[in-house]
Structure formats: C-alpha cells, structure tokens
Length: 393
Image (cartoon, rainbow, N blue to C red):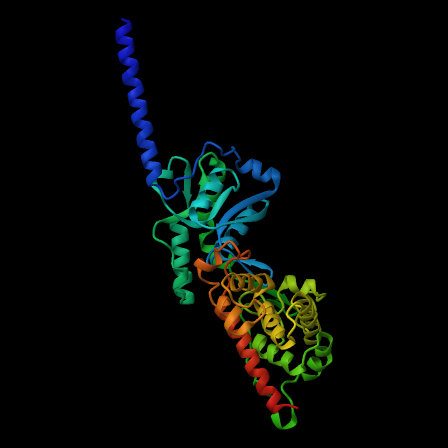
C-alpha cells in the first residue's frame, strides 16, 4: 500500500513539474517575460473612485501622449481623460519606455490601466483583459486617413489593457468605449471659447508678411510690438517676425492644439503670464503676455552668454517648451556637441526628437515632440527677421 502511494505521489509531482515547465516556457516566449500578477494588489473601480484618481500607463508618442507648451496631448490620453471624467475622477499619467515596462508596471499595481495600443499576447490572456481593440483600430485608422499621417496608423492586433483582478474597471471601460465610439473625434478635438462664442480649431486668416515696406510698416500691430519689445530686450521686428510665424497677424487665430491669439498663447501659458481668458484674443494683452514669457525664457537660458545665440533657444522653447529643448541640449552634450550652440549642434538633436530611439533615451525627461516643426520655426523666424531688418527701419 505504501509503495502504491509513493508511486502515485511521484506521478503527481511529475505532472506538476511538467505543467510548471510548460508555464515557464510560455512565459519565456512572451514579449512580456517579466510580467507577473502575483504582486498586483486588487484595485478595482470602486477603489479608484474612492481615491479620486485614475492612474493611466502609456508611452510617449504622437498618437498616445506628449507635452506641448506645458499641456498634455495625445489621442489615447485624451480618450482616457474623458473616461476618467465619466467615472468622476482625475487622471494621472505614468510614462514607460516600452511595452514590456508598461505591462510590468500594470501587474505590479503601479497603474490602473494601459491607455496605449499594446500588442496582444496570448501568454498574458490569463492575467489581463484586452479592451477596445476594434474601437481603437477603427478610430486610429480614420484619424490617420483624415490627417494623411501614416504614423497614426493602428497596429492590427493591439488594445488597451486592464488587469483581470479589476473586473469592474474592465467592464466599465469596455462599455464606455463601445457606447462613446462615435464621440471619439469630438473628445479629441481642441476647442477654445472667444468673446463671440465657441471657436473651433484651426482658424487663421493669412495676412501679408509686410503691410507697406515703403512706409516702414510690417503690420497694423507694429505699435504694440514697439511698445512691448523693450520689456524683453528684443528688436520689435523680431517680435513681429515671430507673430507672423505664430498667427500670420490674425489676432483671432486658434491652432489645432488650442493656442490662441496674435502670439498663440496656450491656455496654461496665458494664465502663467497674467492673461485672462477674456483678454487672450486682445492684441495688446496677447503680446504683453508673450513678452513676459520671452523674458522668462531669457532668464532660463541666461547661461548662454551670446545674446544672438540665446535667441535661437528662446524661440525653440517658445515653440516646443523649455523641457523639450533642454532634452535636446542634454543629448547634444552626451554626444560631444555644444549644448549652448544651435546651428549644427542642438538643432541636430531637436530634429531627432520625434524618433523613439532618441526620445526614449534616459537623458530625455519630456519625451516625444515634433522636432522638425521647432527646427523650421526657428529658421523661418530668423529668415523673416533678417528680411525685416533689411526693408524696415
């Protein structure tokens, strides 16, 4: 009898060991080999609502999440923010460097959900729920075709992710995605309010870059540029060149990112420089706010001793935000370039900041941004300023 029991015990242990080996082999083949559900706390929808905060995990990227002039953007982020509003909580974003880190953080309880199109892996199907695969694919495909931007094309087998031990959150998010799919474009369209009501972006009327060269008049706002340029130590014609680049001298201009007015102040920037929502389309208030921001950026880059060189960095930071420019400076220094020189040095790394191979490097703290746009922004303003100096005295 004892012998039979020993034999049965040995067979049972052998089966368990075999199953364990199969599990390890499957895990080793998974792209998320380090993911584990064992350390994840049970944190479901009621807990999130009680705490008042939804922690969203994502990656930097044009379709997922990025910072522009101090404000958060990205199609995936904006949808997650709307979902957070629907359950009555605020949103906090935690950015990872790759999909493996996303899943590890989710399983370790560092986030409640992944708002990013994660590649679906069968090896994780027992511990996570894949959410809104169909809805996100259709939405991203539509956006890509509408904007003629192939970088927004959806991956065919990808979805948002929630842990299986959060079934109420999974169900709530799935239902919200299904019900509100027709609202996705509405949720991801920037809107601002002007004195005349609701203004939809983009809106911009194009004016001539020089109104009347024979009379020395660049625009109808020259007196405003001349009034405020001394406060930031700039030539008024440089301020005019920047205004043309920003709005083509349209004081009611609204960009598709929500920047407003003659100098295209973002809502958070306007508040920071003392321009209220009711003043932001007023040319005097808008230019006054812009010169306050330029003065702040001038102090930020005070270590760049060449004043003409410093202008390049101020312009770049006005366009992209100082955090992104400082990231490019850090990469330039890391690679033996001069972080205090623009041409042929920092501008080379600004151009690389839409490439994951660069914006995911450890020195980069602010992630993705459209470096080509910033590069051309600086060059176009410098070129137009030179033209103004030749023609306008």
